[in-house]
Length: 227
Image 1: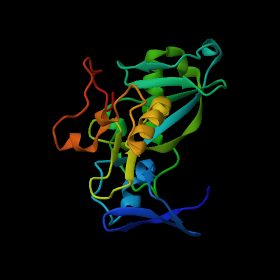
Image 2: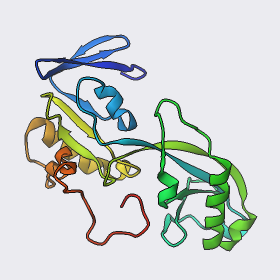
Image 3: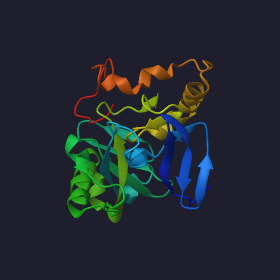
Image 4: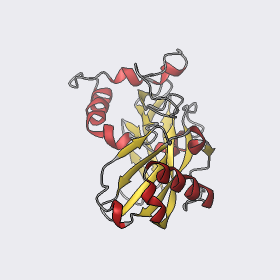
């Protein structure tokens, strides 16, 4: 049901019974919280907050100059602290990879939707360091959006320890879309109690943060907030 905000969870005796929406109640034996930066807003007073922080991130659009017309690859540039990708047009989208680029904690309901001037300048300078011809690019503005960041930059896939039938699937930072096919299989196993996927959803259990078992890569990239 699109454009139908969920106002609250319906919980009784430690068990999920459904959700209350702007147009009425929906009964359900299982509820999956996939609201990203709004995950804790949905939990409200019904459950303990998840270690998820809404972070505002920004992107800058540069119209490539003639010498860079064929630059259509996706590039992650650890040296300059930026990444570059085309949006299917002559524009290149430039984003930040440095810690200072992802430090703005915001209210997910009220955050700046446009790129700030200092971010435009910062990212354009990084792009020019990697590709000097970007000095002749035309800036077409930019935008602000949200990451739902966990302490290790990886998602939570788990049933609530306090509310049976409530499942939290959130905290994907900026790479959830890349994981979505296998995540769908893992969530299906989580909710049905089966083991059809070759990947164990328990790897992303929420208790790992209290267990000091953060997910870390064997060969981490340096100077990146999430791996």
